[in-house]
Image (cartoon, rainbow, N blue to C red):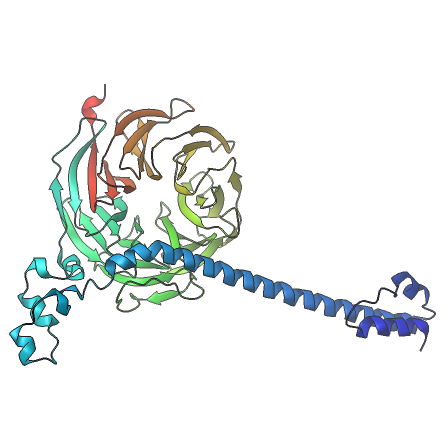
Length: 483
């Protein structure tokens, strides 16, 4: 065997690269075509082996990073739900603890029987368990005592949830609310009462939407989204963050769930396109696009968070009728807002068209858009106005609120359209946005609720605010102030 063949063999079969082997010397030692073919064969084989080893190591590293990210998310979820776990722990068994009550004659005579049925059948409403009271409570709409004198007048209060109301959405004469009591409730504004209870969910119902041009509603809890047929008040599909679809409601739900299954992620936000065809759900750093007509996952928006370790915290979708596309805006926990342009069918995998700079200083909490401008709010208590023509920031309203800004919506008045914003301190503010590049404060309703306002929406000429005081307030524009 010639010198070149010896060198090639040393290169191919050694575990480590021998520094004494020079590629130049190896090439110069070739004296014939068969020898060159022999050396080339071993060089290619060596390169292939090294590439395979590197690919395997990269895959193992990505798998480890994914596992670490999942553990971090699980830890974050457990921390967020700890308070709810403590509150809900053993509430159903409170009335049955021996230290809480005296033993009855029936229990002494029949010690092996379950006393819960007889106890609940004979107990007054005040003695029922917390869960039973929630199930039996019928929501009602009552007239508000303090109407106010500003641009918005409080006309009614929706009282039906037992815990903080986290989300609200309206469409025509219907309203849907979601709460920490694991229930979603459907309200008929014409009848002035609750018409259905949609639940129980695995955990807090933190997002709700009514679907335009249909009889559907969507509720989100943990890693699940339930699709409800409002004609029967029945769950017809169960969407999961991983893209799986389950027929029906997925079976009965017991106690509050605090863990997320493997390969699933908490759905942080949802939105519906104006046509009612697409459902968008944020999970981790991506957004999944669902077709509500086909009840299937059709597309995905990748890299919606600035950092791969961050999460999408809010999203909003708007229809661009001129170009027949949907503009999707996403806000993330790492302070950035991005814009995607997707077809109205929602198909395909899409990357961000624009990442708006400069970012917020904290978690982005809500996004509202119109034809010309984008409005974003954050836990930094600021509201940002962005021009959608050049994608540059027009104005930053510093300290727009004294607490986290947790919701915004556009409110039409007879002569103008104002931007409404609500915060963790319970205040509601109205801003004029069209006459100037800045935001002009028009009205402030301090303590619109006595506790945090978690969500706001506008529908059918009314504004609705959902609060941690367990109620939803109904506001009507005060037309008497219009000149």
